[in-house]
Image 1: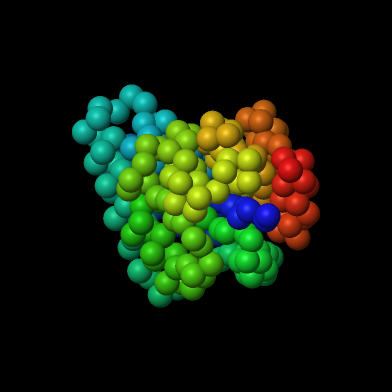
Image 2 (image 1 turned 45 degrees about the vertical axis):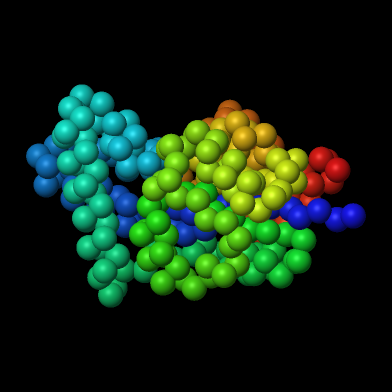
Length: 226
């Protein structure tokens, strides 16, 4: 008997290229708070973490109150940018076609595990109306920050999929470690915010270079676990 399979996607850096919005909001928030703005490499290196953890990583010398204020400032800057009619973070090439093809398979369920708050996820779906393709959506509101496995474990529970029938797809080491900690296979994507070497070092089962390679990579991992 065929059992359901689950593909869990990260969002920023995996489905959508929001780096310009993230970098602009981070620079504005740090500057407004009277702090030196972090480098592009530092900012992209923490994408995927929940905001308090991200700010702590970028500015470990700040007090807890200053860190929370900085996180709130970032939220406000990011929301203001997203409310701008000219702001539109694009999907990565091939993302829509592959997501739609996977969702059309009755034995394949799709999920999201993101460091975004649900409010940010809803705004993403306003710009890109693909929410109906996802059977489970896990956000930072209800879980510890990545790489804690809580989001993947909740996705497995909600869909009834066994860890051996699930794959985590993401662009950061946090995604890979989260998936591995939950006992699922992992695919790193090289088009996102962490370099290939970092994904490999985190233990990614496979690393792919474009969306066209994802279906075959998934099948390879499912065949291996069969």
